[in-house]
Image (cartoon, rainbow, N blue to C red):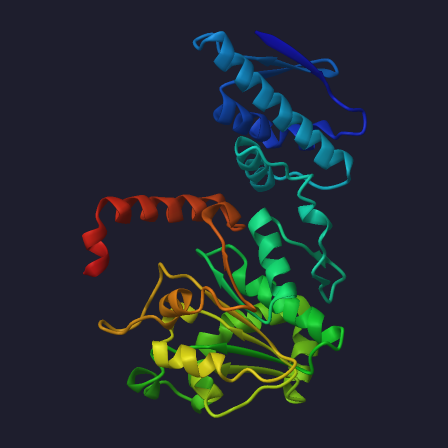
Length: 331
C-alpha cells in the first residue's frame, strides 16, 4: 500500500528531510512507514507485515506528519530534529503543532532582539497560566524551561511597567556550616546557588543591563532566607528549585506577597535534596493549595524538555526504574 505526496515548492527539502534524512527516520520509527523521494514527490510505503487496516492507519499518520512538517516550513519556521520529534509526538496524540499556535506566542525579546517563544504545548499553557493567575506553580523535570520562561515573563512585566521590581529567590540547601569554609562574604558564599537565575537573567536582559538594574535594586537575586519579614508589593517574584524548601519556608515565602504582585514557584519533585526527615514544601503546597482560586498548578512533562534529546531519555529511564523499584526512593 503506497501513497504519493507532492513536496510544496516553497519548502526547503534539506530542512524537511533533516540532516542525513534524520526527520524522515523519525517518521519511520514512529509509524513503520518507509519514505522515498521521487523527483518532486515523496512516496510513502506502508509495512507489508501488518493488516490493511493498520497499514492505512500508519499511512494516514505518516502523511499527516509530513504535511505538518511542510506547513511549519512554509510558514517560515525552522524544523530541527528536536521540534520534528515533538511534532510527531503531538500527532500521535491527535494534536497539531500548527493549530496550537505555539510559535505565535511571543513572551518578550532578548537584548539581542531575539523573540522568546514557548516551544511546546506545555510551555504555552505555562505562559498562559502566568498571565492569568497571581500565583503559579511550574512543576516538572529538568530542561522544561520552568525557570527561563518565568524570568522572561518577569522581564516582560517589568518592561511593560506592570511591576516595579523583579525578585528571584532560591533556597541555599547547604548554606550552613559547609559554606562557612568558603572564602568571601555571605553573598560570595550563596552566589553559586543563585547562578542559574543570573544566567537566565543575563540571557534575556544582557549582563550590563541586568547589573545596572541590580545596582538600582530594581532586580534582586537573593537566598530564600532573606525573604523573611518582608512584604512585597508591585513585584514579580520567582522562587526557583522550590522542591528544596521546607514546609515552613514555603508558607513563609507565599505569605510575602503584597498588592500588585505576581508569584511563580518552580521546582522538580523528583530532585529533592533536603536532609532526611524533612518534607518538601513544594510537595505539600501541591496538596494544600490545589483548589485555591487564583493559584494555578502547571505540570510540565518529559515531552516539554527542550534540552538535548538524551535529557528526555535520562528522565524517562529514571521514571521507569523508580516505578519498578519504588523502595529505592526511600534509601
